[in-house]
Image (cartoon, rainbow, N blue to C red):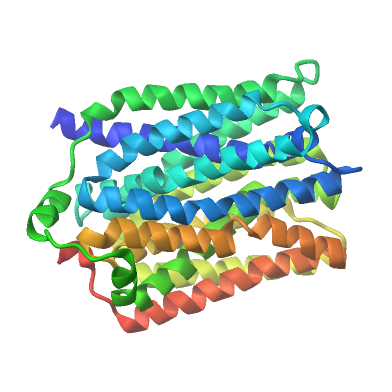
Length: 417
């Protein structure tokens, strides 16, 4: 029993560390852009930063192909071990890259390579952890378990937000933001040492015994074509929404649109992340209890669309309603937690890692990681905050229609087959 609990604890701790690394990059956008990016002003530097942010995600599908095959054929834990090492190295390297003023565009190239290596590793670590925990915990508390994984991720994001806030609050220590990345690498190495306590789930071990033949990735995608497309859209919209609300919107409102003070944006990050993390637990509990996950998803999405509509109306009067931003962050897990399990359940155990991770990666590449860059372009060409919020509204609507379609199709849960 103790070994079983230790498996969950290590998985949750690994999630905390990895999301610390993941969020730190986006939250530190203003510092990274000033240090690594060319440009005459903050807007130009931020635009180049979010271009790097978007381009680097091209590496993620390659990570899904590599680690997905390892995860499905060798084991979820083998994928975790290799990916953790790559993530720790690529994160810590950011602390040692010279500035743009020192080595020019080579600084941008090195930063992009580090980010690409990190995003490749995410497919083998974060996606594997989500699947590992969902398979291991079983049917009765699967949504709550996924909620705890997401709650753990927000602890990591909260730590990143606190460290970022400390870095911008102590101007005399201009190197402090680099130490934040170095710490991420050190924490990752600690997790590597603990991975030996993990044990594969019975669900995976039985599937590995039964399914000895294996098709190539093209055949698997063709066989699961419609499910793969649905997974890609849903994962992309979920990631895009999270990037927009938690990572991007506060920084944009303060540093670019200049509608709220930077100090308020930094402190709001802590509140947003805390609300999101709390809602992850409540969402998982509710989804396991009510047993009508599609209804929960659709109601939460409709509430989000109403909130965005009110925000747009208030922006017509030049008012950014911070409380509505908080409400949106709180509502988000009530659709994102059950959506993530629904997508995992579309795929059989012997191809789940590849299909879930690859659909997640392609969705991220098209929709999620490009969200900040597209929003910056909309701002650059329109100068309208309404256009930026309108893009988020389109993502919510697309996710709503996709989940209604999945509910009507009434797919069998492949967790139970």
